[in-house]
Image 1 (cartoon, rainbow, N blue to C red):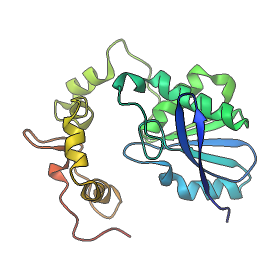
Image 2: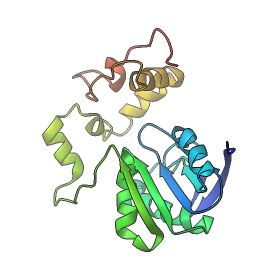
Image 3: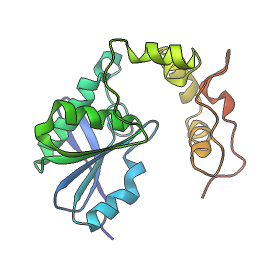
Image 4: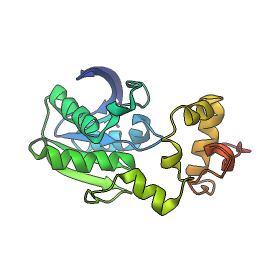
Length: 207
């Protein structure tokens, strides 16, 4: 089985942390929310053993990459730009770009905006949707209500204060219900509560 190595490389104005394994045609693996490059640890080694150079970055704002505090620096153009910069920095392009959850949105748009750098695209759990004339958060608010977690996260400061209050507890309460060993609650914030209100401390950790 191939070994996974980790390093940070300069991508535009970011120091992007990546996990990688193998050599050969480039495959970029883009994680979703609230994940990181660690989510792809099994796929990295499988792809490397199959003859690919598999690379999973911590995307902008996540993990050891982090990012600017200014929310205007997180548009889809910035996120696609990070993938473009990563492919360019690695010098192994064009790449197959694989995205899961939020990462699928970035993968689709990378293929749309820079087809010269993308030889294939895979979207997991989130299908491609054409852009509409209305802002996405407006549609989410209309469809799912004010309590939908993406809408809740639009209020600067409140989600950070809640999730950073006890970071180990946040990870346990957030990730265990999504592990497959427990039933995940709906991603809706109850009125007057926080995102973790429906995610109590687990009695045991998953396998």
